[in-house]
Amino acid sequence: MLTLKEFLENITYNHELLRRLSLKIKLEKPRVTSEVEKVLEKISRGESPDSTDEEKLDRWLESDPEGLEDLLISVFLTYTTFESMLSSKLKRPLNHKTVISLLSRDSSVRRAVIELVCREWAPNNPLLSSISMSREVLRVLRVQRALRRASEKLGEVVEDIVREELEKAGVPVDWPDVPLAGLESERVDMCCPSRQNPKVIIEVKFHNSHGTKMQRDAEKLIKLAKYVERKNLWLAAVVDGAGWWFRRRDLEKILSLQSQRVRVFQIASLSDLVSYVKAALAS
Image (cartoon, rainbow, N blue to C red; front, side, top):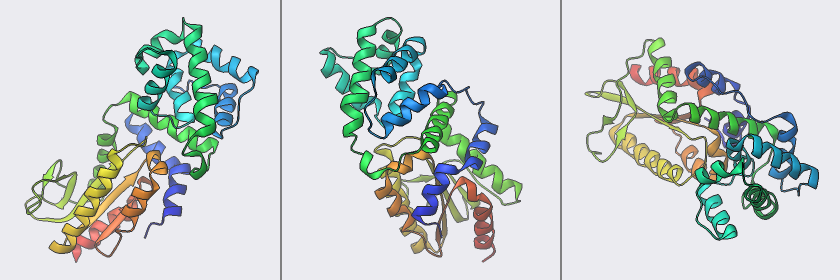
């Protein structure tokens, strides 16, 4: 069964995940140069940038205001928190879209953004002590954000990948939004062999950034795990995406559900998912 250590390693180095997603969505060319990437990696560790580093960031944001997203990703700062902090700092209400529109023409806004991110947030990042930072993690985060920009419904793309893998193996799959008898408040992504006679429930939880929805997803999987045990069914949860790196408590709750009737898989282990579903259907 999947362990926390294995899960986190697969997120960081899971080239298979990115390969499969890139087949579905045209990847954007990376906007971050190697020179800027070194600065982002530095501040992601909570290190203070020198004046040369700040000049590089200033030129970069002036020429490519959309790079703000990559800057925030590097220090795991959400748009909501960023908007609140910057509005307070500049004493006027600002959202991230307005900030992006100002970066190319307002040097004072660029300076405020760089100071806030590099000198106020990064050294005091509450996630810093619990996350092992690496360039690979940052790249995975940025690539997954690029994928999201290319398709707002990234979760549905991942669901398609899972469903196609099952169909390719000859496994009957019914989807989407499958209702469950006795659990009318919930819908699941797919089931096998059919919604009229569900034997295996499949739920996909893919997150490329961290947020409160992940806690709700963990609670839903806990509810589904109890349901399948009660109904003598099987649950296959496909959980992946770099966002889980930052929600380890919720992730641990999900992994602790694993039993004979409940299993957790990642994109890299879809062949194991197919074997599990086939065995469940044959039992």
